[in-house]
Figure 1 (spheres, rainbow, N blue to C red):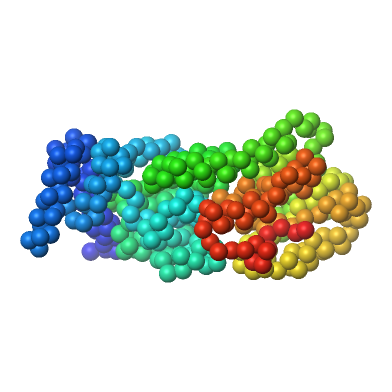
Figure 2 (tube, rainbow, N blue to C red; figure 1 turned 90 degrees about the vertical axis):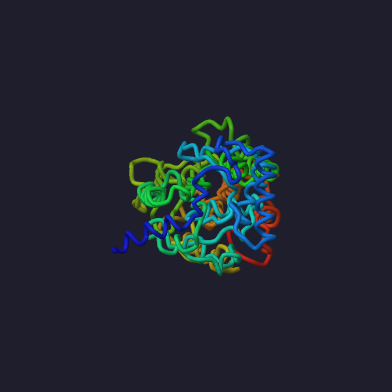
Length: 402
């Protein structure tokens, strides 16, 4: 018996058989759990429990039946994920594996019971400060190197993957799961794209029956993004602020296809290097001086491991900024002459928190237009009200300087 056969067998055993057979308690299998069917299933469960026997439904099964009958009007729920697939849910989510930190963060924003997250990707697992509740959860690796045996060992009913990035890796995980165990539901969401995030918030909220919370969070997110869009609307192209956005590595910028360029443009910035097919091109230092940016933004984070949620160290970001001023010829750049050089951490400009970083960019690009926008306050409210973590930005973390 080879290893892959054993994995397939584990997959079959990973989810109760009834999970793939429709709504629990739906005796006639017509796709609707009636009051009579639910009552019959509940009585059978109580009788079995009283007699110390085994009924048709176990405790989780009867709880799921109650959920479907009371909250879904006795019918399965159909949702469309960000790949455009329609996924039919016959039970609520109870045992979830996330390979997407952005989806994990969004679930927490929506008030999902984090005890129902039974395993997470390695990167979320490493973020012990931001995801303290994940320290003891199973680490299932990454989408590029998934530990399928661990995935199976935790018996998930749902696995969440990315929708539009690293599609080959995510497609492979999905195919392996669906081929061996159709009872495991695979959901695909990005939760980091400005164009689609508000819709994903509402879709995920409907999946976990947190529609009111979903509207509250979508409104909070949308109010910040709408304020930015409204504040930059109508600026003629030749009057937009010229911005040199530098990636983690020296003289490496972002082209049109990069997500950081999208946020730069949303904030009203004009990137003179948004050309070509290379996502993160290396530019000639002289070309930056010729472009004469009015604002310079330097990215800190994974490739320049300073700041973020990991530590409160404004001096480290200040040092990065000071080094930019010392570059040969940069004293001739408008951004340097006008003291408009900034450092921002990728924790708040990528992923689900992109709206916070974009607010900082807008404020830096157009201080007069965004005099009433307070990115720091937006960030703190997000952490306190939606992430529910005890994190005081006045004394913890370093995200933007100055």
